[in-house]
Each structure stands twice: as C-alpha cells, then as structure tokens.
Length: 167
Image 1: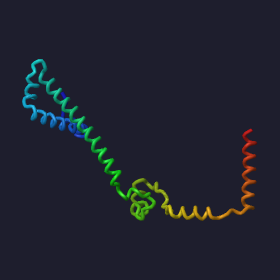
Image 2: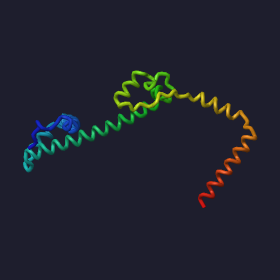
Image 3: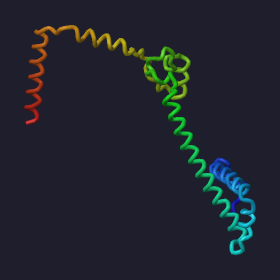
Image 4: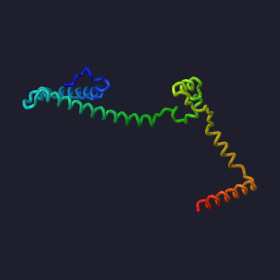
C-alpha cells in the first residue's frame, strides 16, 4: 500500500491534474446517462479494488487526453493570434532598442554579482542605417589603381606560396 504522507505534492500534481478532469468527464457522462457508475460497481466478477483501480485509470486517461487536446488546441489558437496580432516590441532587433538592460548600470552590476564577474564588455552597437550609409559610400568611391595593382600582386604571391607548400 502506498503511504500518501511520503509522496511529495510536486510528484503527485501531474497525476492529479489528469485525474480530476477525468473525474469531471465521468461525472458529466453519469449525469447524461444515470446509473452507469452504479451498474459498473455492481459487476460481480471484478473485485472492489479492481473496480476502483480501473475507474482511476480511465479517469486518468480521459483527463490526460483532455489536457493534451486542450493544450494543442489553445496552443494553435495562441500561435495564430500571436502571428496576426504580434507584439511590436519583438519586431525589432534588441540592439535597436533605446532602453536595453545591458546598457543599464544597475542591471550590469546585478549581472556581475550573479555571475561572478563574467560580464561582457559594454559595447555601443551601431544601428542598421549607419551600415547602410557606409555601404553606400563604399560603393560610390573608386579604388586607386596603384593600390589595386599592389594588392593583386600580394595576393598572387600568397597564392603561389600556399600552392608550393601543399605540394
């Protein structure tokens, strides 16, 4: 026999979270079809413990199935709702936020106390418009032909050294 005083609630909760909805479904079935539970307990070839164990098992299966079905159903609804509604805060890259926790001195101090000094550098990140401006300026400038010739000769020498060292 199981000593219920020694079973922690944290381990019993998943079982109870499935049995209680299962009992609710069995109660609704009994309300729709009166006398089925009385008939079930009047079966002669099953012992009382077997009948109670089967009732617990069926209520567990019904409750577990109901929990999984509702989790999948509401998860699908939440996924559609989240995709259509969305939260505008999460549409941006974290470095585009003007107020970010890693730029807050109190947050950085708490992080360094919690993780024993393993604190990343406080870098000021550059935003996308800056990189777009740099790319636009780089595409509009023309390289100097003398520098370009020097770079190509250096690349040829490095390639020859790499090929010779492989043979």
